[in-house]
Amino acid sequence: SAQIADLQQKLLDADNGDRAKQRWDSIATILEAKCALKYLLGELVSSKVQESKLQSGLQQSQASCSDVQKMLMEERNHIAELEAEFQNQILVQEQQHQEKVNYNSWK
Image (cartoon, rainbow, N blue to C red; front, side, top):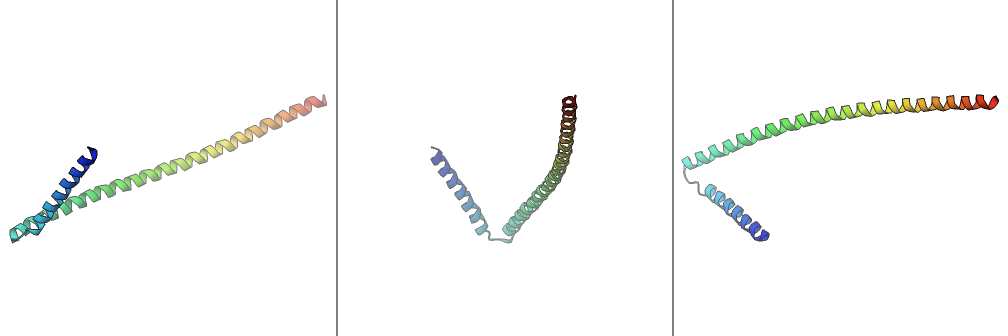
């Protein structure tokens, strides 16, 4: 039944496409041509507006992505600094422990 519904939809789409082509092919007068041209120009303007909105959205998304990447790099650098500090503290603790062990072994 799903395949039948799919085929029926394809037939409807093909039929609508044929109707649209027939409409354009059947333009016979200047008035019909003017109406068709007016419709096409309206569609062009609509498409340009939509393209502009999408382009603006893309630019905003790119700027947002750039900000997130910058924040990520800052956080990575911060983590690296914390890790280096932690490693340094471990080294200091190990040295202090070793000094205590050495001091107690001399006693």
